[in-house]
Image (cartoon, rainbow, N blue to C red; front, top):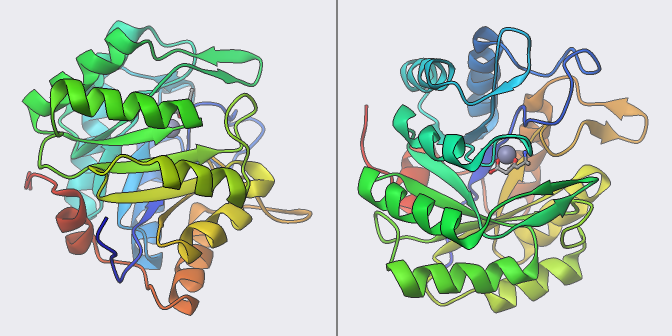
Length: 279
Ligand code: KMH
Ligand code: ZN
């Protein structure tokens, strides 16, 4: 895997799990998402991982909502736009495939079923293959989400079966610290990195909750990229809630700077991930 001088910072601002009533600062409306994206881009983010909410702030995979968000962010930021195909644990598999209709630059593709707290996040192999092939056909670059070490092996099987994704790059993101998945520890992360298939060209990591910061530091030290955001962590420091996603991006960019791998530009992120020009 080639080493990159800069750090790709992805912001995951919303997710599908948090309730707006409990976290009024969670960006859920289109206006809030655009404002968040702009501030996060200015703070050093180059990609946004998006979950969309409806008028009641509930997670939705409705095409109109997704397309409106993709269009608005494409017009008002230069971020790489990644739509979640994971949705919420309640979304049907068929509907999760329709996310590609909104023509994002990138889509998430989780490499296996995982326990997700008290729920199950379903990703059977037929679904993963369908999504993989449809993303190839639509020229959307997948980001492979790895919640567990078994997901690394499943990724290798997907590549063997279907060839390389659109663009020829393979970018993965370790989502650590989900109750039911791999723990958010540097040791678990390094075990996953050691197992990555040779086709992988870049990797990033995030840690849920209190694992957010140690995983970011471990990823930076090991040559990885970073994902931060309220989808993964709403506590900035002990007793201090995150008030805006940009705080997490600013801290990640500062860490990356100190490690002499400063936040990369959106253009460099497009090159790193081999994103199709759509603007
Ligand atoms: N909301 C989780 C069940 C993804 O975005 O692809 C799944 C998730 C992964 O967040
Ligand atoms: Zn997500």
